[in-house]
Length: 156
View 1 (spheres, rainbow, N blue to C red):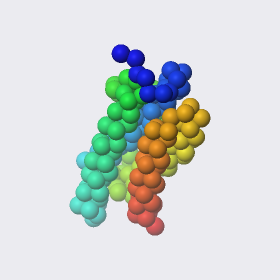
View 2: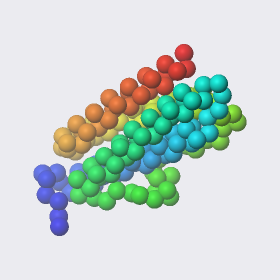
View 3: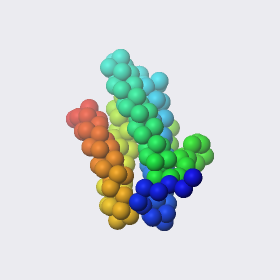
View 4: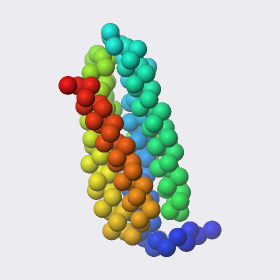
């Protein structure tokens, strides 16, 4: 059945495209946070192990919300690793050391990349007359900015 929510089909396709790219970024970020949780070592292991767990737990919820937003605008969410890796702007990294500072620095870079993209996506959602997605992205931007601040604070 056709989705009729007051957004033109060509606009909803653009919105679904930006949301699927975001979904891919969030999935890659989630995987990196899980990796950090599993493999961090050092004198701050326990605290960082728990911190990374809080990050991937929040990201799991965000991933579900982004995928459901894609469905809400009438399209299908990408769901394979191949698709995620084709669409993401993030890169995989092989660490020389499994220290918390290295993981935190990498995660911070990724959060900041997503934040910059979210600012552009908010404008794009507005341009394509999708106030719902615009509002959704603003809320996500605020969450990611807070997490980036926390990550940045670990590095000072």
